[in-house]
Length: 218
Image (cartoon, rainbow, N blue to C red; front, side, top):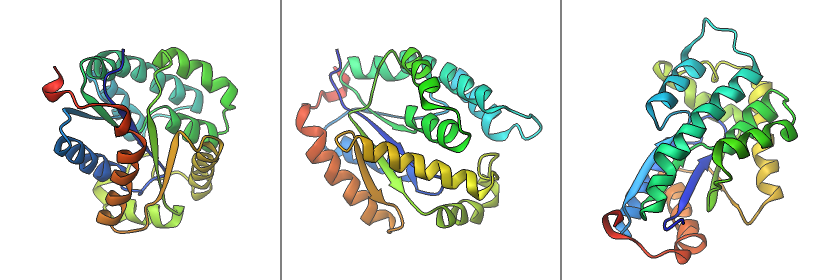
């Protein structure tokens, strides 16, 4: 049984998800929660290997279907080894990307039909869905400019054509529009502090009212 909130941060490249995820962890800890901060791809040793392949293996011609299956494999491990064990003992989980990134990148970006992707995600996650998805939305040109400003952090996905990233953003917005109760859409063009304030306000009103902190996860 879930005893703690599960929150994901989603969005196109350059929206500041990693920074906001760390700030959200700090906020939740200040509110009395023990918190696991994790990410996808990643979150386990196997997931980190998947991340290395998908983001940095520039010499591999990775097909979209292969991407989707590799992500699902890492996600299955991540849910069962990291996310569920934390939630079951009352530790909140903040995750930088989750299922909806597969729908946006492999679905929207690469054109794999969502009806093909959904059963795979259901199997990988066992149906585990977040309490709230925070969509940090940013226009593609701004997001990619942010990413490319730090040459050392540019990865294989960042180098995809602008049209690909436009399709990714459009899919994120479509997912959020279809499920307003499950999403919070925040303009990530604003400064870090302003975005964080909006994230924390939404988490306070839409998620934390459902749970009571379990100190130290016990």
